[in-house]
Image 1 (cartoon, one colour):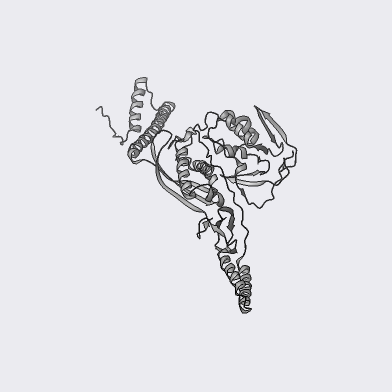
Image 2: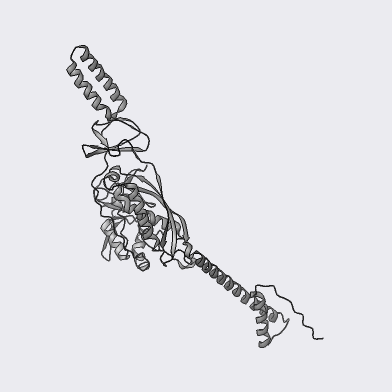
Length: 428
């Protein structure tokens, strides 16, 4: 097997039960999902991984790469900032150098950054083993029964021309005193009229023929389809535009058990109309429920805030990373409904009203302690500098008692919240 990028024969990475083919030149790796799951087990991941081989393909300008295993063109799939090549035939996935760490960063509580694929396999498993998420999340077990396919349609204007000719033949048969044939043709003409469908940009119709799904009609314009085909949504088409879901504010406990109010906004679109219509009862309600569930699963695994030097992700300090994981969680749950999550962001984040005052006082106290700490450290340095300067320049010589007294006076002056009141000593 050769690398589809460099056309160099793959090498073999064999360690701790992992057998992965990789390119020694560009460090790209050819991996299948069971191997990704093994890597996740070594990282002690409890959250189910996203299988890139199951993601929908996207359109890109660059030429498709050839699968190194079955020699067929591979598709590009996009999820949460990562674009990888996947083969729909053998379900293999090609991770370019650095994309393996990007992929696993979606599931790690403490991301490791973008690093070399081999370095990630060698070092990351040991270094972040204790910092991964521990909450298990069950995957949806709804089985996809229908997949979208295009319905056969004809240009509507062409069919109008055909029906005008048809109407001419009907009139001709009436003139020739053949009313029986003319009536039959007229009935057929009337029955065929419901086949006309008009669609605007970014609209689609899901059509069934006596209860059986025959395809989806897409593309703006005037179409003609099977006149006996019925739309699942009657005359209202399905919108394919990007839409916004705002579920309002929710009260959720964070990792520390503190109740907080969180609001999110989800940008989404219908990607597979057949799944949206037949796999769930109402895909909009389904999306709203899954968004709420994903939000609770993500929020309860992070604290509201954390010290800047702790390296721990928090809801307030790492909103972009949290939003990316929230998007991945929602996408995983709504994939069965044929929906694509374009973006998911936290729009509101605050402590719940019942503890907001107490937490504000706690933050103020912490800020006062930090400020006092900085003042004391600065005051000690200034006192030390003053004593050293006085002694070095032979301005005055202090014994230990006088030094202690001067240190006390200087610290009182420097650390006090009030201005010093000078006292002039007069021995006269």
